[in-house]
Amino acid sequence: MMDLRLSLTDRTVASLELATSGQYFARDTDLSGFMVLVGKRRKTFVVQGERRKAGKRLSVRMKVAEVGELTTRAARAKAKDILGKIASGVDPRASRKKSDADTVVVDLPSIGNPTLRIAWERYRDGHMKKKGRSNGTINNYRDHVERLLSDWLDEPLSKFGNDPALVTARHEKLTKENGAYIANGCMRTLRAVYNHARKAARSLPADNPVSAIDWNAEHRRNSALGLSDLEGWFTQLKALKNPVRREFHLFMLLSGHRPEAIRKVRIEHVDFRARLLHIPRPKGGEVKAFDIPLSKAMIRCLVRVMRIGQVLYEEQSRDWLFPADSESGHMVEHKEKRDDLSKWGNDLRQTFRTIAQAAGVAELDVHLLMNHSIPGVNAGYITRNKLLSDHLRQQQEAISRRIFEAGSSRQKETEGKASGWPALPSRTALSELASVKA
Image (cartoon, rainbow, N blue to C red):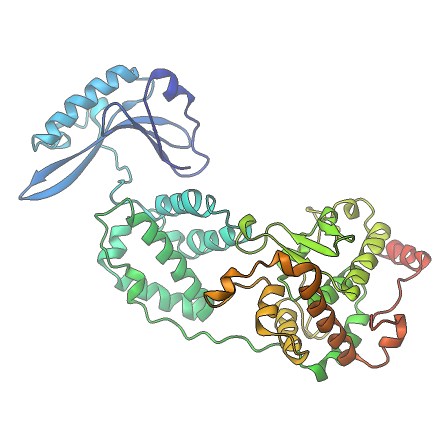
């Protein structure tokens, strides 16, 4: 949770909710340096001030009392006395006896030197969630910090800022054990968390310790299908047993979008009248929401999967476009065995980009269709929504047509209008498949 600033009274302190994870501070607006540290189980009155020693400013923080042991007014009066001593250059902690329960020095994460755990939670709640980052992006960062750097969670960030060799050694270790791409991704996350923490913790070393690493070389994966490969891919696709998954992979090829977003499309997101599919939470979160213009082949694909879903997954299909027997009700895994289907997921995204080029679609239009950021200053003045109903849909039609033309000359005759896909199986056939699945 994010730190708070409010006038501390018995009532406001009692109303503070315990932290769901980590800790947060509620700072008093009436007395600077007086605050309540709120954890998962308890609340503690804390005081923090600065004193000078040998010309250096040193931060002193200590426990005043547990909430409940003193009233807020009494705790503030005690904090004021402690702050006065700190300002005069005295460290009150040095003269306290361990037997005095009210003056036990506690090891609390400093605002000026937060632990990785505290810095991550502040970055997650104060930056990522505020910016509307998607759950997938947040979970990816969480995996880097809480799994790959789990043994560092309770270490202060200054430890790494003052000794970047620790970071370079961890990067090398992750490269060997987890791979070059994951190691680089983890370090990018650490770099972002450190930079965010230093905005408030100015005593942290200015040089980000991640700048010391030698980045692993990353190459764009070249896994797209070429025009000559599509006929064989369509043959594999038709052989897949689950018709919902067949239509999902086909739609991935026709749209060129990320599988994580398409799997979670709801029925309400389809607008057949406007011939659009709305993607409310793509990569980047709600602020990046956009609409996909639908070609005729894409519309037929969606109609088929909706009808198939009603038979195979009657309850789930009321909400989800690509339903499944899962806890969420929609497809949660799109991977196939490579022997069954050679290309899926982001392979098809690359294929869409490749075939768009072969179909003569302009580079800018491809960026717009795939919801990529638009390069160049002048391109930023283009309003995407104004192009959806005519220009971009025509380009989408051209790409779909080229896909099926390359897939097989015979497939065009199956449904007509270059749809390139078999007609919907009979309800009897689907019912038999449903009984086998059950």
